[in-house]
Image 1 (cartoon, rainbow, N blue to C red):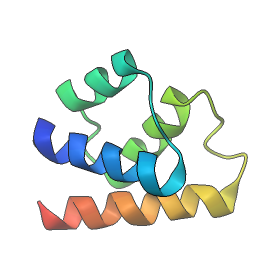
Image 2 (cartoon, one colour):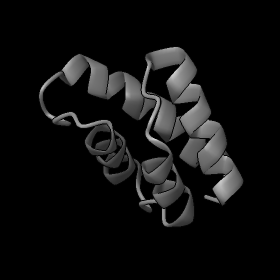
Image 3 (cartoon, rainbow, N blue to C red):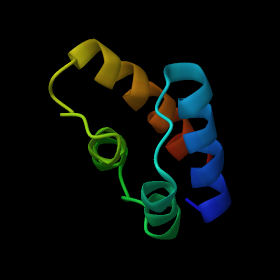
Length: 73
């Protein structure tokens, strides 16, 4: 995904699910995003200071949005 695609996805995750990452983490993901949906989803949780395996339902919600973004590229 391009940096613009990642920024759009991160904006969406912030507004819709409350994953509003710190600027340095956001920049890191935009510069070098993980290349698959699961890794990207985990990276978002870790950047937010959360364990990706703690809340399976929330992880799946984030993963669904990430999957859609990966499919649109």
